[in-house]
Length: 465
Length: 112
Image (tube, rainbow over all chains, first blue to last red; front, side, top):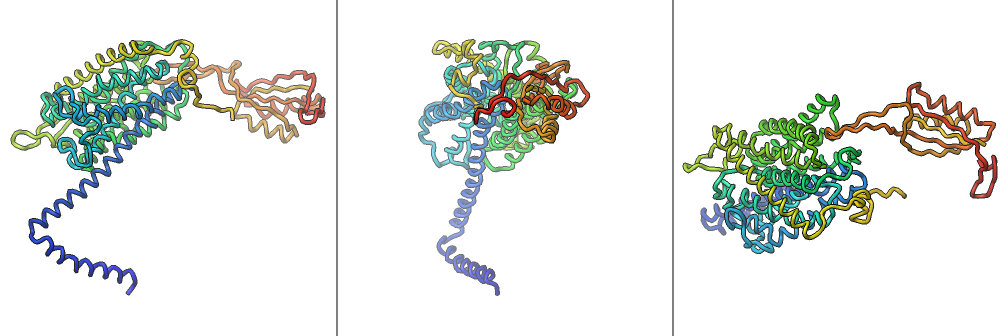
């Protein structure tokens, strides 16, 4: 007999001896069953928690380095660090605000518009799950996961006013914006009792699986307002302003694509079949968006560009965010295709015709993508994918047009319009207040010098050995 | 002594350097430059914004040679750098008043 076999037999005999002892200890079948149930629950919780911790890290990676690289590659060389800092500083500042009270104002029960202070300073946010939101993972994990969304949203807006806004004005604006726009909209869509949250007692059912409305519509439309209010870069559009390193943008876009799995599949809040469905729908949408943008470019210019391919993928991802956990993977691909064409048209044709300087196309990609994604969710959402919403008789409620519920498109539109209204008004107010505290724009000389030297006193590329 | 300055296609740089080495010319200074002569530039499009780029990347070689080797070096560069198309570049030749080796104060042709 080999030593391995001997060891195996020894383990088996030990288990055989232990089993009757366990049965005796448990005493009766009810206790055994409840012990088994607890064990199953614990292992599910462990699996879910592992996935959600990884997802949280993925979503953070979307901001830094994903978005930081994507955006900083698109600006001129003199602004590379200043642009990266606009993403990175959100990782620091929003994190602290989230812990202090922003989390509570979004996910505390509060009223239909905004939460309350019950979780301020993470009071009561610990290892025990919050049964309303995510019953199988620690409340701390849920809090951390949601935090990463609050970090990336204001960072997205910065693309609209790239290369011309002072650093601390950007920080002040983002803090105000977080509380005036992100907090109420996120509470309305995702918070318990939120006006637009059909799963936790809301009035108008708006389906936003991973933040198409909360993240992309709010940031995208705010970006448009900010680009118009702050004004164009000096020399725009006649001076040459080309991406200084599409290589950086390329790496950043690939990290966004990868991180988006945490963003969308993680929004299932469990390592479930729904997470798999959202994962695949997300991936198909990114692929389809990249293809349709490249096709549009090939038709218009005769060449498919690298910048076009990555822009299309990001457009597909932003657009499928809203429906990721409500639509089938095939619908995800259709949504991505539409996103690539529509966002291409907005960025390349409409923007250049209207002449505003949304420098990195935060509106054209996230605002437009988020908006059409919101409506398309009303079309393609189906109970075959997501049966969380129940009718009075306990059956899964029909979701979108494909389930025969055409009215959902109207509901989605109402949700989008509310988010747009908050974004537009909140951005206007935030920028006005910021302007009272500190000048928003760099002066002409600083802008010529570049953000890196003028605002941060350093250079991104010091090649002199 | 003559200074020979050649502005060539960057992808021809290795050919030219090998040819010069084979001809026994050791000292050369190379700079990446941008410029254009008769060669037209190209169009770049970034998210629908078009730019005409007429400053093209070129390589500039500079070397100082004794009068006896001037024509040989010019021929070597011409043969190695020529593709026959617009954009092959130009060679300029200057008189050099003095050459000094910093290390040991050699002067004139012995400093080359």
